[in-house]
Image 1 (cartoon, rainbow, N blue to C red):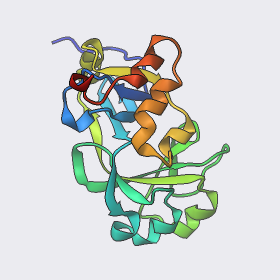
Image 2 (cartoon, rainbow, N blue to C red; image 1 turned 180 degrees about the vertical axis):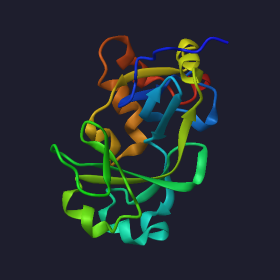
Image 3 (cartoon, rainbow, N blue to C red; image 1 turned 90 degrees about the vertical axis):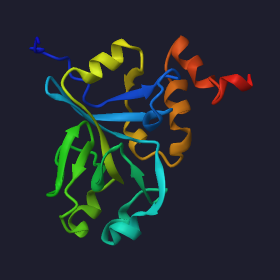
Length: 189
């Protein structure tokens, strides 16, 4: 088995599920990649809000969570673990926040919220994450399961996550923008 010596990092980019992707965990999913290297990939699904409010599971963080103030299903892995993502503009972030790329970073949910609150531009809480082993994501990309596109800081905190798949595709150039009009059920066309 050959090991990849170098992988072009996709950290900070979006994986947008193609209509052909058959895995129900990722049907019309928009995944923000938080880490991507030759050891694997990790991201969160940005458009899977749950009915559970942030106040139900992390009451101290409820007032800082952006709209809708619910927990999102970040992916099928470790659904019992919470992960916080926040947008913090500027060069320096506060204690309890670690920059992943651009203005987006991970929040240490053990940090008292009052230390981070004044600096937060947007906070989103995810239950679970999406993960791929070494070479697994590259294989899925080769198979045509995902479109890889640039992310925008507002993607993390979209107030209408249920429309994010179409929004992200619509802002692309060329033929990819047309995919946004793909029907939910092509058999009804």
